[in-house]
Length: 83
Image (cartoon, one colour):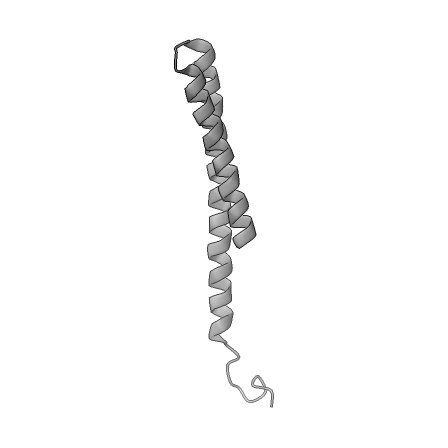
């Protein structure tokens, strides 16, 4: 029998659970995209700083900024593969 004909609700709690899970996945993916953008801005700022102020640690700091950027891309790819 069709539940809508009988006046019963067709609400299924698993449908709400699926929508909530999808929302959480989208929030994680959006957050990882924002984090990549943040890492890119940090990389740019470190590059500008390196050209402005020359120190013994400039190369090390730039390397760390590149590692941070690539790690953020790796985490985003991990999110895409898991979620």
